[in-house]
Length: 136
Image (cartoon, rainbow, N blue to C red; front, side):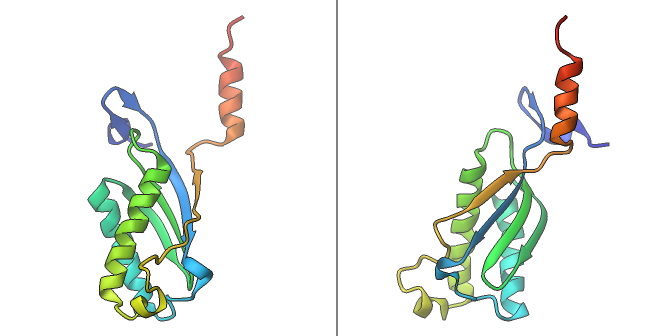
């Protein structure tokens, strides 16, 4: 069972876990070696620490990132995603200087992004809970 104190913020208690993903601009396959994938994995974990997110799981493929993280209740998931994209982009340009040739304008990630909430209960369980607590 989860400890509610780990998921509280001021007077709010709850979970704000999200599956997020984004891809490289033009879908260029820049993570061709395991070394580059590891750079990105480390930066994702460091970015989560920096902004107060809880890193749960991540996967770096040739041209996209999948990440499951827990975000503070007071933060918008898209803002959290934008912060991570900015942080990882800046650091990857430093660690992989050859990316400046591929992306001369300094935009590593595509502007598109995906965020979907991941709960600890299913939608069906939530509906059943609400149905059971209706006023009669």
